[in-house]
Image (cartoon, rainbow, N blue to C red):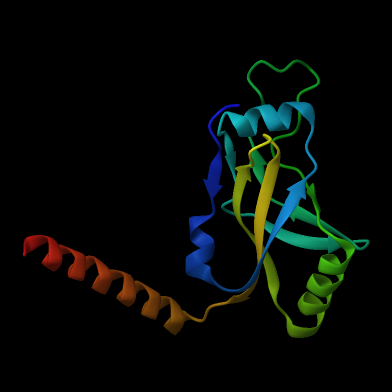
Length: 150
């Protein structure tokens, strides 16, 4: 099997505070999985939404497969996520009652070569929280430089 693919949503860490994480399967067409295995996908602007009791990942971009024919997939489309019914109910309840959102964190392939998405139940950060995050990151970098110097 090929090397594992790990496509991250770096912006999500900065924009949201994670409460709970889940690993979900994803329903893909034949050419979509081939593009993902080549690493030609992005989940930077994507989010998850419930439609008729099912969870969908919206705004994810999977580039068209270069060797595909007229059966190729659309680059941006809704992709269904697969979770247990119990997990879906608890996520739906949290989103509706508490005003939280569901954000995809990373798209990866497991040992069997299947595509999976790690999603998180998240709460949006305020501006002062984002400033605090930037300050902490800068302090860590400065400490690492000082340690390296000595």
